[in-house]
Length: 135
Image (spheres, rainbow, N blue to C red):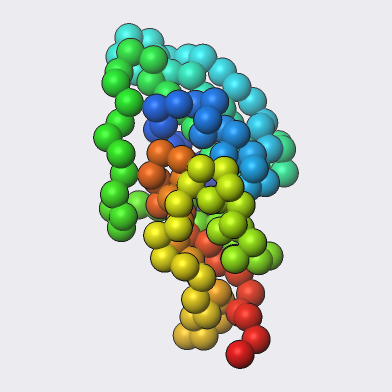
């Protein structure tokens, strides 16, 4: 059996705001659609780092017939992880776009990265990893 991860669906309350936030981080809209039926009717924005389906896709989903999900809490059950060229610059961009910093950037030599945890505009935790800063 061969398995390949191809997307992650993130349920949001404000699709347009979430799309703007993730676009500011560098993701590109691949597709927008409205689908499903009854209580799972949903509007979606499909985003990837390449703007096509050739890379991992983040699907932002708003269920049209259900209330918004409760605000996520850190550390929570699951979070997104993005590799970025500069962790601290990405944190600044996240704050500029309405997100928040949960754990500031720290060199993590045991993992060979600099890492931080932030939250998007709806509180979903996001881990950022990038190159270590020189001592």
